[in-house]
Image (cartoon, rainbow, N blue to C red; front, side, top):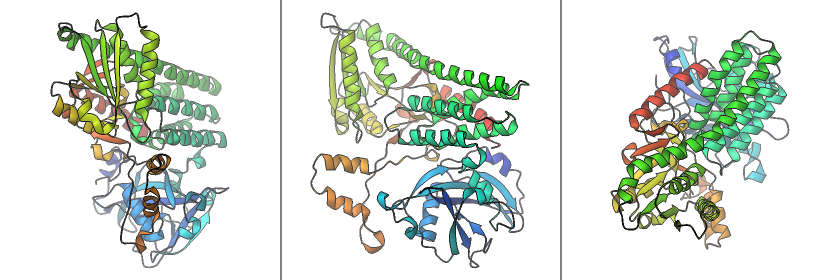
Amino acid sequence: MFIFSPYSYTSNKSKMDQSNPELKQRSVVSSFVCSDAGVTKVALFRRSEKVSTYQHHLAPISGSIESHETAETAAWRELKEETTLTPRDIDLWRKGKPYTFSDPSVGRQWTVFPLLFRLKDSREGGRGEEGIQIDWEHESWEWYSPDTIQDDEKFGGVPRLKESLRRVWFEGDMNDGASKALTAGLAELKADHQSGSHELTSIALRVFRDVIAQMKEAIDPKWWETARMAAWHLWKNGRESMGAATLNAFLGLLADMEGIVHDILDRNIKLERLLALLDHHLDKRKDMPTRIKRSFASYLEHNFLPTAIAWPTPSLVILTFSASSTIRDSILEAFASLPIPNLDLRILESRPLCEGVNMASSILSTFQSRFPPSSDRHLKLTVYSDASAALASKGVDFVLLGSDRISDSGSVSNKTGSLPAILSARHVCPAAKVLVVSELEKVAEPGAESDHSHEENDPKELVGCWVDSGIKGVKILADGIEADRDNTNYAVEVKNIYFEWVPARLIDAYICEEGTLDVIAIQQKAQQVKEKADRYFDQL
């Protein structure tokens, strides 16, 4: 059975291989809609007599995942068909870990992908409850407190209703302090569009420490399961598009935690050791950028310096498209360590957040403090618009690329605009080397690039830039975006996509804390990630 989901977990496959071949296997989404106005409530819909299974039972909005769909795509389709709700009215709040169960009474083996959507009110442009208009598949709907939803015949829900809910509503499995710490941490991660994945991972680990400190219960198998589920949520429901680093950090941490959890010790001693371990992992992360800087300097020393030093006026020409602090520091550290007097650094501006100017100002400030005018070092710093990638590529020695995720094939997900920049450099300056400068923890578990979360951000970021700049016609465009498509003959969209994939064939080397790696080493690392992820998240 194939799992259609950007957040699906291949470890489900082991369970499905043991399935009853007489049962029809079906992948479905279970989309819960909640209102967080005051006390959180969950909408449940009573299925009508016209549906094929579970007539008159309470359920979330459910439906099959078609072969061409992700779970999220199917959820949005089903929500619009069965309730008229669209992204105008709701936003995706949480994803739950998929699971599989059999129901011989209807001849099905279900693989369920739980999702939780938050209902927007009128202040956010939504229609509120008025937007929920059910179709023939349901006969009514009501709000329920999450605590009252049960998996029993008396409650009248579809099978495993509470199980599906608990996978997106972790508050039911945690005490108040732990759940509040996790909820606040997820909100912080979701809202942070400035930090890179290294910084976001550190934030996720600090949040996890807060959650662990609040988990006052006995440290037993149930406690360990809850802790692992909290880690899963921080990976999947923070900024999943940048979550490969978070996953790797948690896998290393959980491996170290496991021994303490299962040791025969007083509960308070265990907790003290677990918190000390978390502090150690956080401190250890501070050394990673230094090791990467050394690796980059070593690469240049062996692969660039022998040729460059023979030039009449040696210079290092670099093009980059990143606000990565690791790349910023690596450039200056390498330049300082090489007997090359001139650094020609070209930075492509990125929109709508305009991170290029931040990168350029930081480099200039550091250069000024490190290399006084009396030194023999010279910096030529040029900021180009991202549309000028071809012009900026003329005569470059290296194109430096950060990464938010590295697939098992060696392809790299990075800031949108990276692929055009590299293609331009390959055309204009074929001799230029494309280097990925990144932590090894960015390597993701095996899976096609299309299986990984595709992050689309609020188009208001772009529209806001146009408004602030006084661009004419913005109001007409904005009105077109908000128009009711059922009553118009046009559709207007503004896409604000942060990341795109750069194929491995366009990359010459991967510079990380362990040195210079090739695609084979990346593939081996990805397999290790899968094995560890299966161990700690498979049975959740």
